[in-house]
Image 1 (cartoon, one colour):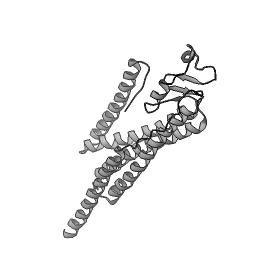
Image 2: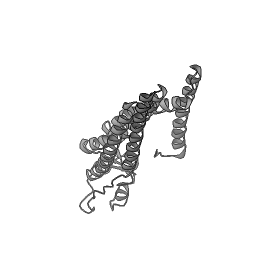
Image 3: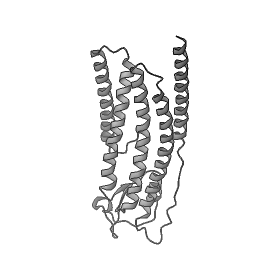
Image 4: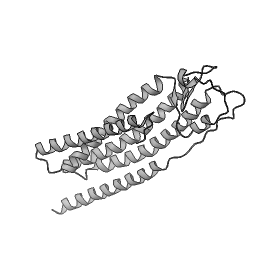
Length: 238
């Protein structure tokens, strides 16, 4: 999780809020499990926490929609902001305060605008795919723990879910990351930098973590599939 705030107090406040929400979910799960006499406390906490994460990603998709589509300003990330920061361009001293310069463009730290709708929709699509990848992982965990709580840990839907989620994570996270990089560059290119500015290149980096996660999910799928096979063979011997 990465945050970017104007002051330390705001950043720490957001982190504390996230920790408090996580603690409340865990406390609610423990209290509910004890009230029902559950003997699978760890499974209950994990199941509820993973479901809460899925809901949080859904909320993030809505908030991101307002941020990307509801305003013409875009906060550039570290992949493109250094280029913007180093441009040899003369800005008015009040540019950051008033939010505009002589040609109507805004440049206030990493925030630039007005950015056309095209780059912003590309950014939003990349964000949605990234959130989808994260939510898919949480959903796989939720489904596996729910089946385990039902005393069917090797149900065929478990290993099938891991297989599907592995593909979803690998595709959505990679494509989403590339779309975000492309959208950031298009947003910076959309401003009028003048004839003396150097062209903004597309610096695309392929994220590797989705492939590592996918390998782990494929391995879990194979393990649970083998467990299901052993369970069927054992039941046939009884």
